[in-house]
Image 1 (spheres, one colour):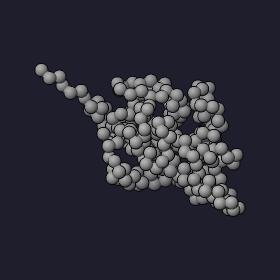
Image 2 (cartoon, helix red, strand yellow):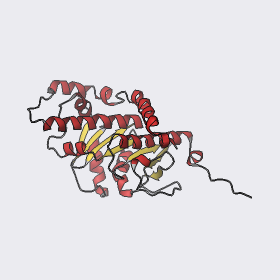
Image 3 (cartoon, helix red, strand yellow):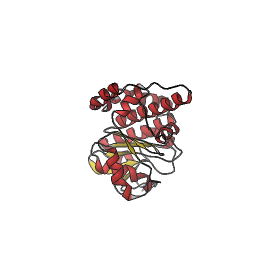
Image 4 (tube, helix red, strand yellow):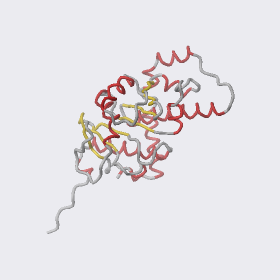
Length: 255
């Protein structure tokens, strides 16, 4: 008698978890498509709907363009795998993510990158400057965290959480960028905005001309409307369009 085929990952999880897996896999693929990946390093994590202490993260060793809904790994706050998988994760990679997920109920998705433009601005003493409209949206909800070495130290977690506070964007000095969102769409669009602002700043600085900064009263006005300009930013409108773009390129992330 032939043994029954093993259940697929989709058959083993709730519809809500499967949708979260598809969205997170899409984020990894879009990150690769936009050139924000760093080989197999950096991470994007997502809280499993209905399971406060379980999260999804990428299998360590796969390129972001190889991530699918099924091969994402389910872990707990300690980075321990809680669902059978042939893959492993980098526990150290969850140090930053786990601290933020534990501290912020609204941080359902945590997105971290090592892009050249992001690190270039993270290495500047002034950090992100108000040089573009994109920068204003980022500056409305932006914190900074000083570099403490490779993120392996548990003692760093409370300082990281304190520096993020209730903000949605964190510049990790000499390290990279981080965004948090209530959805994959929100975290992705926030990263798009801050990454664009960093790229514009580096390009503007390379021109050799004096730079025109946006006046402080305008920046104060944007900060006063922070909830309106940082929560959403049209993310739920942009996200379906991004998925259509991704489906035209390669829809295998849905598998």
